[in-house]
Structures are given as structure tokens and as C-alpha cells.
Picture (cartoon, rainbow, N blue to C red):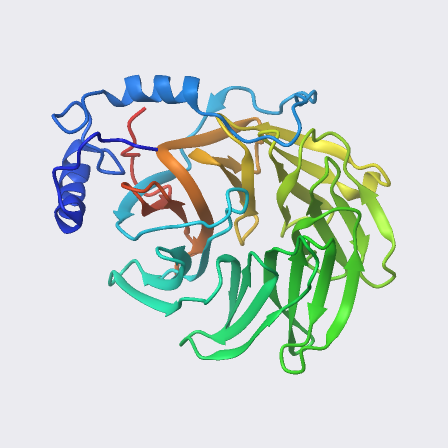
Length: 390
């Protein structure tokens, strides 16, 4: 997205201007609306953006399920700060590039092709590693980071950047490591990796031996373990998503209702039978896996503009949120799925994550990867009136 026909600032001056202008104008991104640098109002640009933005689809069928949303908007989170860190993503469908370990430890993909730790309290940015491949997925657990690449790469390093191994998982023609996760189980840590070769692998990080392997019918874009770690939920290059029994390998059931490919999924941490999937058909659907083998949708949540590419629950199970490919963060308090908060920006999203503060207050950090106005936007639960412009 191109905002300005000319850039009157160098990089440092623009960042300083955004800080000042953003706080004075109450615009979260510090975009100078109605100025000599941007001769449009926010409302005018939003209207043009809504008419012109084209969200990628692999399939063109429209979602036929009725939406849960009643049209009632709420205000669960408020804007806190726009952190001027250069958020990035490397694959247009993979937008899980922000992970909050603690309030002062946020890991994210930053320009150019770096995995970075950011402290929003001290504003310290530390590049952990810049891989020798294009990184599209990562995950951090304790002192370890796993990183996946576009050519099937899988790299394990510590959070100081010391590489433990750097391998290629598969030699298939299509082999992107779409998702990789570090899993703690029975006192041991394992790696769970999802690839375009249609496999989900569990690997021992020390020996690199494959502990478990599951094969699906299509490329696996995302996989998550249930709270009891006995079930695997997987999103594929398919209109159907699957839940399998990890012990037997049998399919527990599959979804039926999405009309495009799925790229993110999540288990409800407070109710083990609810499973959420996000999809290029612009929707997130929550399923009850007890209704298998064809799961029934419990709630259908449609987005505002683009593909729903990343869905997550807050760690305490209170909220569900999802980002669209651009501009929008949707937040639902699970007490009432018919209401939501919708926060809007301008720019492609790189990822988001929930974080619980020391006093059990939820925060959300959202990465915006616009070439000029990229940043990490911080929100906090129910602390003050929103500063967003609608």
C-alpha cells in the first residue's frame, strides 16, 4: 500500500514525526491525514480502501452459513501505544509472526528477514537471528526458538541466536514449513512442524529423530495440539479442516462449511471440545468436535475486508480474536459471541498475540507491515477510553 506520493522525511525524521503527530492527532499509526503529506481524510481513504482492496482467494464460493454477529459493537480493549518497530511477514498467507512470551518479551519477524525480541517497556530491540533462508514461521519456548522456511528449512537456536541445527525437512517440490511449534510434554520438549508435503512431524530436538508423523490429503498450513495434547487440529489447502487422535492416528472428524483454504486454527483453552478455524473465505468458525464425524459450527464470525488468516484465544480463555489480511483486528468476548470490537488500521497485518500482565490484565500486540507505516500496536483491556478514530 502506498500512502504518500513523495516522502518529505528521511527514515529517522518520519519515525519522530509519527510519534508526535500520532499522539497529538489521536491516530494510532501517526498517519498525517488532511495534511500536505496526505491530502485525504481517514474516512475518505477508508471508503476508497474498502472498494479497492482485493483479498486473495483460492476458491470463489461464498460462505453460506449464517453469521453469529448481531451488529452490536463493544469496547473491550483500548489503544496504548504505537511501537515503531518494522514488522514483517514473508508469505502472504502466513500471518502468525508475533508471539508474546511475557509483557516485556515479544518475539516477532522484522525487516529484513530477522527474528527480533522487543521490550515495549524499555523499547529495546534485539535481533536474535537473521536466517540464511526466508523465514515464514517461528515459535519460542523457554530459551529456544524454532524457525521454518520457504524451502522446507527448520532451524533451532537459543534465544541468544546460537544455532543448534539448521536442516531441510523434505525434498518434495512443495515443502514450505508453514508452521513450527515447540511442545513441552512429560518433561521433554519436541518440535511439531507442518509442511507443504502434507505432513505433520514431531521431532526430537536433540537427535532430530522423527517421533511421530501424520500425513494428510493436502498441504498442512497450521496444526495445534489440544490442551490434553491427545488431539491434533489441522488446517489444510482444503475447504475441510481435520481433528485427529494423536494416539491412534484416526480421524475424529472434519469441518464442513468453509468455502476456501484454512491457514490458522486454535483450541479453546477453557473448553476442550471447541476448535476455531480461520479461512480465506473471510470467516472464523468455532466447531464442537463432539458433533463429529462432520463437526457442526457453533459460531460463525465474518470479517470486514479480507481473509481471516490468524485466530487465537487469550491464554485465560476469556477472548477470541482474529486478524484479517489487512486493516482489521476483530475481538470477541466469549460471554457473548454476538458482539465484538473491531479495530481498524491501514496496512497488511503480520501477526498478533495476547499477553497477560502481572495483574492478569490482557494486552494485545498487533503487527502492521505496511512499507512506510509498519509498527507494533499495543492495546490493553478495559483501562481507558479508546483513542481510535472511527
